[in-house]
Image (cartoon, rainbow, N blue to C red):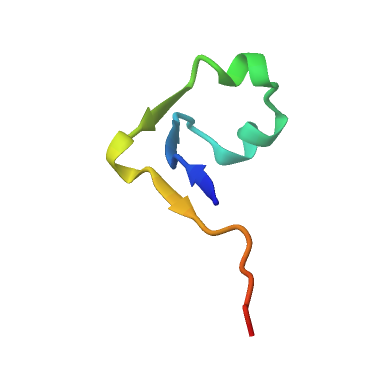
Length: 51
């Protein structure tokens, strides 16, 4: 099993085509990440059938 924590990333931009050409340093001042602890969940990563 594995624990997951979803995140929401909001990026502010005037022209979406410019996002592809931006490097990570320039983008860091334009986005915000939100984490909601109540959305954490555990998923089964392996399943074994006993039959």
